Length: 253
Image 1 (tube, rainbow, N blue to C red):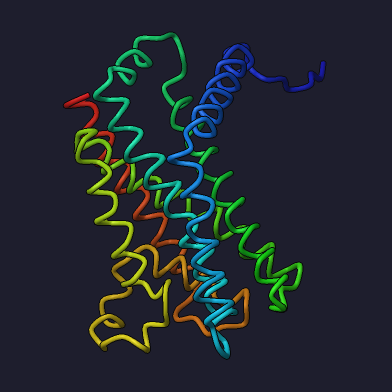
Image 2 (image 1 turned 90 degrees about the horizontal axis):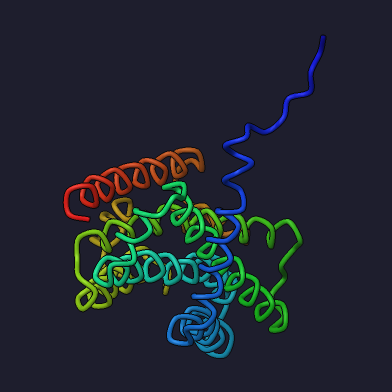
């Protein structure tokens, strides 16, 4: 007798927990203006100034691609790094471990929040670019949104690694020490060809450079290397960062 596969009872029972955790994470993020306002407006204002008002030639096109990556960095690094440090210091992480909930629920909820913010920032950037007369095809818009969403994975893993090692007081400073230099060293603010040759030589070391190489072709800009290689490198960085963060949290909590 043929039977239709159904969800396991365990998965069906866990789904309300995942849903509740996702709802709580999104509400917590939106109720904190210190996180929402800079995450959404900082990349848009910078692109409006340097890409639209002061940009010349191909600058509005190039910076639209790279700023979609830049816009995904803050929600991922601060959302994972700083918030995890606060949760650890405040005892919320210990409390969640003691609750009868799937261990992956908080992580997936925060990842979904990060993806949502990254896509929202990219959407705002595309809207500003279109209003300024930049030609953005539907396929290019989808491409940029996909890269922004994917950026949440490696950058969130790096944020998780930072949050697992530093305290709540030091987390914002450490995240900024990663956030701002990565944007400059990866060519997100201006092409690497305008910087000293050493910057170009070291660029492949940074995950944000690989993300930029995935985003640039959407706007017809030249990119280096194969897209599959960039994806593989980013997935490798994600796996290593997650493994190190997990090891640290198991030892220290």
